[in-house]
Length: 439
Image 1 (cartoon, helix red, strand yellow):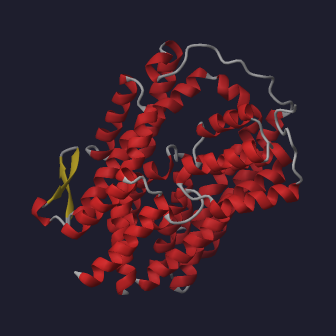
Image 2 (spheres, helix red, strand yellow):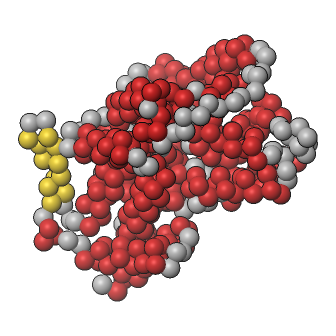
Image 3 (cartoon, one colour):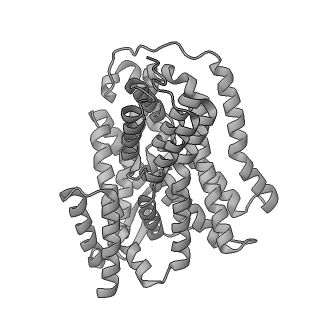
């Protein structure tokens, strides 16, 4: 049996399946990967189990949304470049359209009682969802005391020292890379060598061709915006910021939100902290990668600095720019790196770097959890500074009782009754509307 495609579909058949997956892939990366496994391995038998797991390991080594990279790789495995493009684009496009519609509703509907109520309830759901993600990822990633120390160091670095997320990722990767060679067990890695098959011929040529074409496609919209509107225009700022974000996006949207909040809220002033919480809540309700929350940020940033466009036109352009520079790099990495999958699996130091990054991401998500909790539950949160130390001051007597009650209900739904993510978000939105009118 061919390990790459035991039961080869036609391109038209695969296209329909990828479109269906793109429309129903709710539930975050874990749910999306499980759904793809059920479809392409169990039901369609397009890819066998070892090949699917090898592909998943490869995608975990790279920045960007894991599930979208996995879809792109499997599409490439089945039908080459056109298959990878179809799978990767269709995995994102339906959710991107939904997120754009929700962003428009958010920007134009503020002040409408039922919309404000729904967003208020969704904030409580988001807090519980982030806590759930922290627990889930922590259980999987923190297998040793070294990994626990890396997570703790990452939390201290970003929460108390305000270190930038890319620096934390780079430091963790370096530590993991160095430790893995002589002490792989300290990172939860097996010391046994990994046997790999021969790499595909012509892989370096494919790498350079894919890298050249991908880089041109990636940066063309940013360069065009810079020439047409000036280097300081909001669309150029959005393009460069989210391009930078794309190459350090290890750990998924939850880890990136802390960095986005630090930059979009505090550095650029594009939005407020509560609006960032709203954005994640909206992204939780859409199909597609959770990292589509970046599109919401780009939309609001351009909507509020619209010249020379109308606010709606600028918001749409900002959303398009954000989505383009967020997902194009991930697909570029897949097309350039796919022929090297087996060699990457055998690289112990690279695996150590990934394990260390994943541990650091847990610390970053803990920072995000605390940040969200403070902004959801308390009326006023102020950033405090003393020398190199940074923390957030709040009045414990300013606890928002309605928000705390809704968060408690969301916790019961998620942890006690084990309701799905969509059920929790929708239920809390309805309760938020009720609270808006009743209290």
